[in-house]
Image 1 (tube, rainbow, N blue to C red):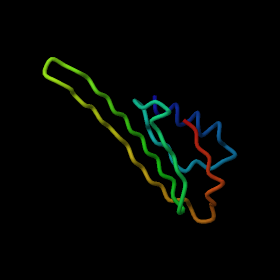
Image 2 (image 1 turned 135 degrees about the vertical axis):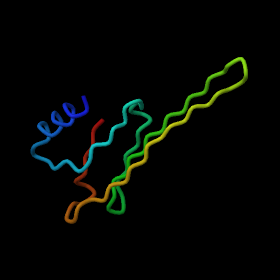
Image 3 (image 1 turned 180 degrees about the vertical axis):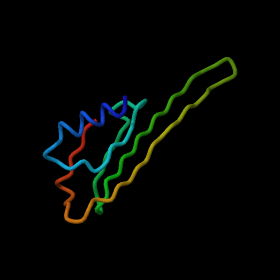
Image 4 (image 1 turned 30 degrees about the vertical axis):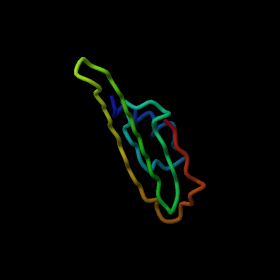
Length: 83
């Protein structure tokens, strides 16, 4: 469950402060981009599919975009993330 995963992450990162947890279930790692700039962490996940049916092509697109401000005193080069 999401709560168990969150607890595992919190327990394994006890030396660090957890700023955010973004659920990107349904996306593969290469579809997720994390950037840190201008005092913000931006998480972008994009997934695109194309299927050909008897009626033509069908496109599926989904995305998630989250932007989190860094707390005061946290520098951009201190930020780490994992998938």
